[in-house]
Image 1 (spheres, helix red, strand yellow):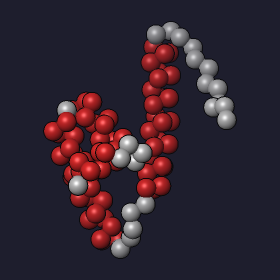
Image 2 (image 1 turned 60 degrees about the vertical axis):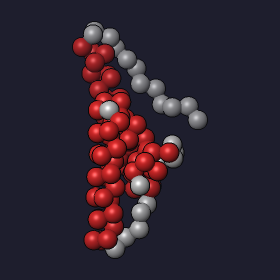
Image 3 (image 1 turned 135 degrees about the vertical axis):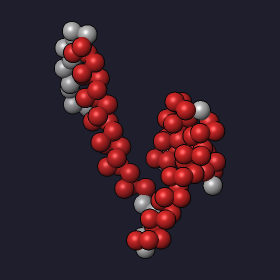
Image 4 (image 1 turned 30 degrees about the horizontal axis):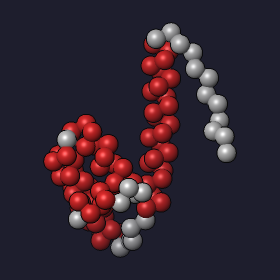
Length: 89
């Protein structure tokens, strides 16, 4: 099941797999994804809920904010000053 999730490039779990694969390698990433899927399935049964991909948008937004904060901190360490502008539509 984990291998089939990786083939769909538009999902949160797939992008999570590819990030872990870059850091840890393919074998460890697929095992981590399988575990993540089992935790999600267990939680779905326990709470009697359905899978909702939009629930991961909160996590993605939080990760993006952390990433920007980290980049700004690194720039300050190097003596640079960055100005953050809002995204254009």
